[in-house]
Length: 210
Length: 45
Image 1 (cartoon, each protein chain N blue to C red):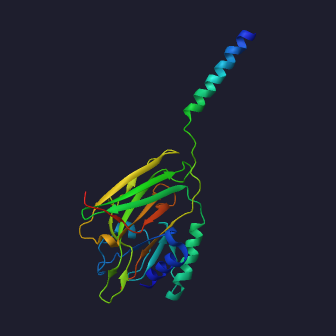
Image 2 (tube, one colour):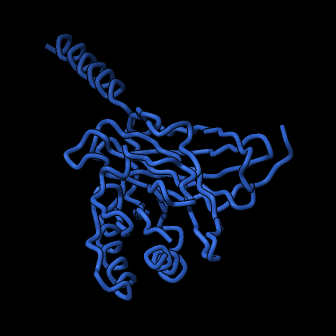
Image 3 (cartoon, each protein chain N blue to C red):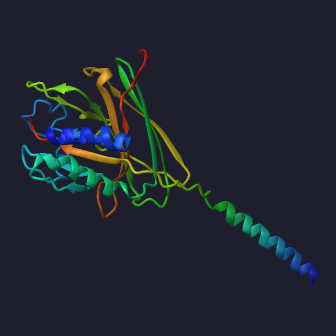
């Protein structure tokens, strides 16, 4: 909880939409494990059972301080160091949803000099305000990958713009609590799974059923 | 001599046009602010 709260505070006080947060709960005994243990992703990060671990842009693990009161400052410094690198990927996301279907509309353009030749687009639909038995609230908890956890390979020439709509079923979700995290990963470089750019969809625009 | 250089010049211009047209248009994406993806493998409870 404390690490998650530190990230929430950094979003509100420091980074706003320039910080995209996904809060995984990979353990079987976590009641909020609505996305079953995602070993494919979680295995990338070192972690100790029951202890938090934080990875930035998919590859850089933050050394967690032993004192939780240092989470905020440690996270902020690490995020600033990653953020200082230029991004050559333009990524914008909008979304709309009804009681049947959600649609994430992704617009992507990238310079051909961007590192990596096999970028892959990932979209994670997240849900907010999941409460635990003690009343603690969980935010940005992954609900599902769209279309799936393998992502969508992207092939773009310089100057091209990709506009894609990713759809998912909204049954069982609270529409007013849904959001999405979208990111483009370089799956071919030396730093495997390095995220080139990311974006947050804070809330879906609710529409009539189509 | 004049008759020979004129077609040569035309050929050069034509070749330049063909070459330039074969290149993809350069529309560089300006460096944008990086939005950092923070993935927390959360502690339990």
